[in-house]
Length: 181
Image 1 (tube, rainbow, N blue to C red):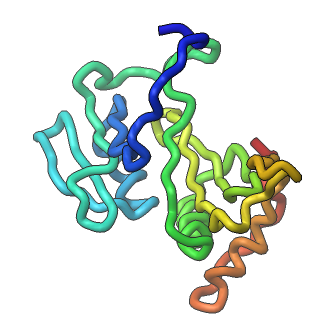
Image 2 (cartoon, one colour):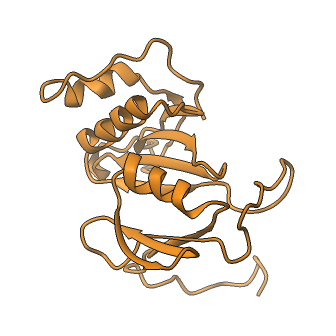
């Protein structure tokens, strides 16, 4: 099939079910995905693989060392996964994720408001790109006069985001926000 040929749309209920990442150190990856981000370990295959999820799903993220034990990240300029995007249900849940990152001392690569969503960008311990984001309700998405989606990229105010959790906890303030992505 070429891009000139008409195609049938995919079923609108199709979703990306999970991502499986090659990691160099399974325990280190679990400390990040479970310890920092808060995913729950659902199953382990000894010292070689583990599956983590949110909300009791069988797994959202698979982690394995089958081809990567002790390995290094791919060098810049190569193909592969750009990032895995983890969708949070609310702005407050995203703010909680930001607070977890700050407490763990994990720096951000960027933080952006895209109009349709707000996103935090970072790297996991194996240098895999990770996007943590929440979607605004569809009726709040920016649109052109013709009704098309008009996404943009603007700096996300991290202190404003942290205000979402401040009433419940002593959320730390961000001194200087990271660059936009």
